[in-house]
Length: 293
Image 1 (cartoon, helix red, strand yellow):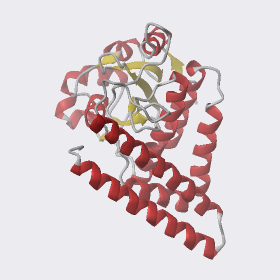
Image 2 (tube, helix red, strand yellow):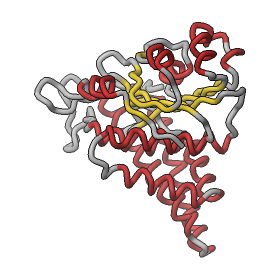
Image 3 (cartoon, one colour):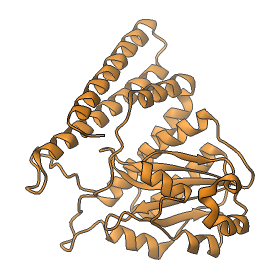
Image 4 (cartoon, one colour):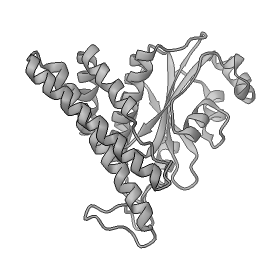
């Protein structure tokens, strides 16, 4: 496979936007994506059915934490996503915290016209724009049959794109910090397995990118909050963080499940996962009662 390429000027522009005038990382105002029990169950199924691939995902992204700089990380993340989905082309966009637009920073397989057209996306009509607006994975099996893609048809035709999927890149706090999209030259809809893998990869890769960017949390490590953050918002953030921490624990348990051949240990791990699942549901009920969607 060819090597992914960074768009240097765009990458430097958007990464600079994550620093305040003093050079410190600024909090991102990106919408939070709260994991659901269904997602946790899906990840557990992956760990049981595809243990080697799930382990390889974790190992690959863990190794990337040690890479010196985001420019060294992004091409590898894109190539891994293309390998996972079997797609021929793709790109990575980062969320600009100043205005919420998606900035194209890394690509593979596209020419200047496509790159210019999608250099900055701030609408909800494109595939990646819809994924950003809904904070959820969006799949378009055939862009020529999708009315929302009409403004982009000429560019898609020139680039030989017929099918697109866009998956949010999410940090540990559940905040969307970017998008990873893959493209195919023929109409196609990825299978449930592939979509679940790329969704999991969006969480793992998103945390790698967040650490490289030094994204700050709106809730400080000592438990205090900025004065501008209300107690309700701070509590909602803490609940978000708790859910994501539980999700991390569930993924660790799921990884252990895939490694164990001890029936008693497997039963205990399943019981622990079920408890985590129930806890996530209880926290989400509390969030609804707080008026948090």
